[in-house]
Image (cartoon, rainbow, N blue to C red; front, top):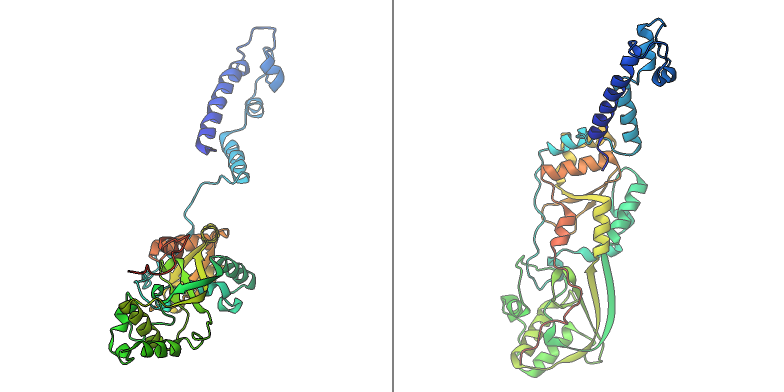
Length: 361
């Protein structure tokens, strides 16, 4: 690695050697009647010639301040400038904002109770805001590359393997299993006493079941191995039918259309290389110090309202290739802004799904 200090020390040592070699010649130390090679080359006076201080100045090597300047310019060309603290970094790191950690998803049967990262695939271009259109376009492209979607048809799947529902919990409770949800008061209103009741209830949730229509299912790597039904209506009927089939040991099979969502590691790595992605509280956009920092530096950025978060946080994207944006991103992390990339890395990374809950005999 290029070491500026070592080069300066080396050049100083060479300067001392040249002084020792040249000065005796300049002071008349050579043999009478002869001219030294050093005197001839440098124009120094030899024996019998007059000696002046100006002749030494013009013949000695460059003084150290000038030499240091040349070395600094060379280091600058090579991109080896000394690392100094960027003023924007210091200002950002001193911000006092109500940063809140990104929530850890709890096990829940409801699809929308977890991070809705699948929406990034179809993220509208107008969803991002920021001062420059080109910056928003690059940020949009980086975000849409985070998720991979695969679809396949399953010839048959057992109803008892499904342990997730579409939509979101209405009462705010994270139910760990469909059986736990089916035991609630709202689901007990769906009375299933006989097999006939079971078929009637299942047909309410799945109108095409009797005609052999496929059920739509989905999985997401960040939500574990759970297999979710895509429907968001008649969830009480569907949960009650699944719980009854498990309780009675009924084998109820049907074709399925399955969609898998995965967090793409390459896309996440690219996002980390290109951006600081930090979660900012909604209050930041009314904070005088933070807004002054953005206005004073004219920094390019893109922002996106985070999907389903209680704190109304926004995702702020700052490009690392832009020095001021990079400095502000580092400073915000020092101030306590949650790092979205680190959060996504800590989510479950499933590369091969199991198809739903194992069926107990």
